[in-house]
Length: 358
Image 1 (cartoon, one colour):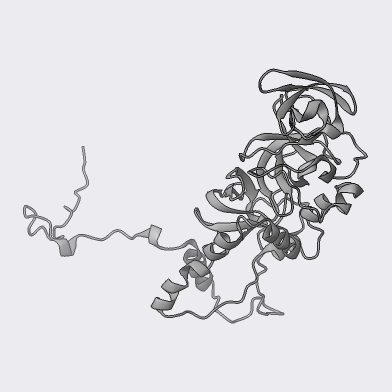
Image 2 (cartoon, one colour; image 1 turned 180 degrees about the vertical axis):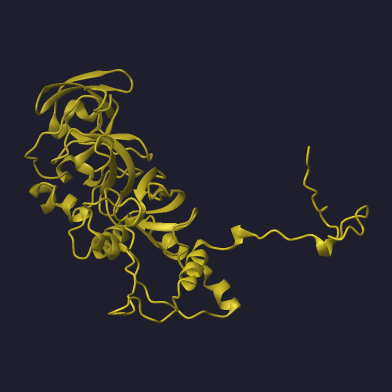
């Protein structure tokens, strides 16, 4: 059987030092092909075929042809989406020159951190438009971000194209300011009517006439309640509903025995007449609608029902309220929509949610 003799690795070809240890200078080094990019291989092949940078390609009409590079669509943007609208949402702020180290550390909180976990953002579009929040996490595959809203501390998932990074200073200043939310929503939507203005249009004309009147029964009021004649004008829409938590405001009924007493509506006999039960278990029958007043809970997150306007009958959770303007911010459960309503249009609800009734 024939065998082809092999040169021992690290030894000289003439056989000298065959029994010695291999020397490093004679051991061949393997080429690190992984360190060479793919473009370099293709460029080497073109050079081998006679191509030179800057010279035209072709035999008769040789000319330099610039390759066409197709721009990739942003991830998560469907074929039917308009790319210009996404580009309009991109930040277009001026680029500032780099500052010294001490000034950069001083103004660190004044600069947006970008879409990173822990960064402050404002929602530009969608049902949460105009709200501020902090980025809790990112989903690069779906181009979405998990944001914890400042109002209500609720976790929502928003497309990254609908988020605008802001500075921590702006977040601390405007995150809980309802008026600033409305202003931000209106400006950043380029003249589009904000949701807050649309919500104000839902109020009844009688409520608009009394918009200058400050409601006396605040969620955390400590003083004497308002009299019956200080309430809003007559309503064109009845609001009585079972399981509503209301306040009795009639001073003349049974000598004012139940004045300023909180009670729950047990049954509705007619659109403007109901049966109520007090916390002590006393049942009051035949109470008129004008004897009662809606009650706004004092704790954020409590369930409430919209009793007036186009959203009447829908159940949500109380997120915040504006005592000066007597308005409450409610998160509707089924529509996942944020609405702002007058105190007279929302009431604490103790019954099942609208989804449980289906």
